[in-house]
Length: 191
Image 1 (cartoon, one colour):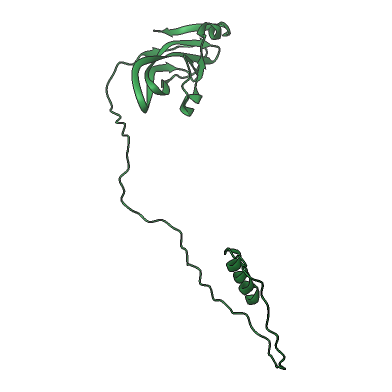
Image 2 (cartoon, rainbow, N blue to C red):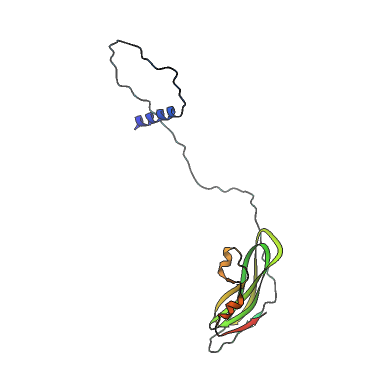
């Protein structure tokens, strides 16, 4: 194996050079009776670097965008729904949110429609004039509902912003077309 490495090293050294022959070689004529022993190619002991991979803790300065959430008391619409032949009611907050970029937006819950065992929360997302630059913003609206446990679906009128966060709600361009497909529906809240 050592001979193979030695030969390989010689071949690599010769192949990395640009050699141009100027004259042909000619060996001298010698008439000598000589005894010889087999030769030996050189051996090499190669020490490779000892590499350790890991982590170290260092203090570095990085930019951070800080969003401050403050708790404030505001007036939130409250709906108390009594349905026939249902059990206990539960108070829950229905929240609709959208994550937007480029321009500020507003989102408002416009209606809640009951259809069979489902509640459809109809909201409207509107683009405003203020530019956001390279920032993103979440807008939201909420309403408190005191009703039996029902299946809640959020429908947002407007252009769906290109953010993964917005995949949790259904966006429609024509709300009247959507409403026409609802069977036995009743508007229980309208703003």
